[in-house]
Image (cartoon, rainbow, N blue to C red; front, side, top):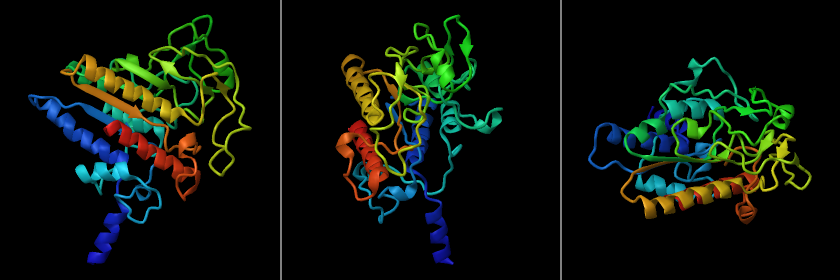
Length: 311
């Protein structure tokens, strides 16, 4: 019987990114209960990471994850918890609102510039709540809960696909993104950075460098996980294999700037990674660093990002 209980417990092991969500909940309780010193909050969300990928949950994992292992060693491990969903959009909606996504009349995930935003303007969000508590709030990475771009006539483009991206008037602000839903700062992508119809970065409510041509997928790595991206429009400064390093750079810049300029003001930083979502495109310096192929290399890069942030 004891062996059965232990096996069932192992089968219910929680993904590390969700453990961070649970840890965040404890910190938010401290904020809501009126603790004298509100903590800085770093919230890291990783997609498609299995608990068996990480050493602290699976000693037999072939992928080095020293930073996640250290985070677990210094904090807490959770072995019985649940995600709001198995895919990007509803998970982010639930995390940002505290409301289960199944209450929405929406199924699936957003792509391109589809909208409107699933978070209605009247709904309190996690960053909005923390901002009322005196926090500076920032998000870097993939948004993926919908937003609205406009065409040259000022009409909203609430549909997806290549034709929709071609209609966008990039001189107009984009509505319903992070800066309209509680975040003071945002740099990232409308949805999945490497699978979408729109391969371009957003800064605040604008796309400063618009896409100019159809992505050339010929030079991209050819492996079983490499053909998950759509033949969308890409901006000249958008490297499909470097997005997580760009997101990391933006988060580190925010942390350093905040420490210098506002050391006494608490911050909430939501770092929303592309890793380790398919297609598995590790950046150049992580290619071949594990014995588990491109996806293993991508997990190793994700662990590196966690380490750089937690420093």
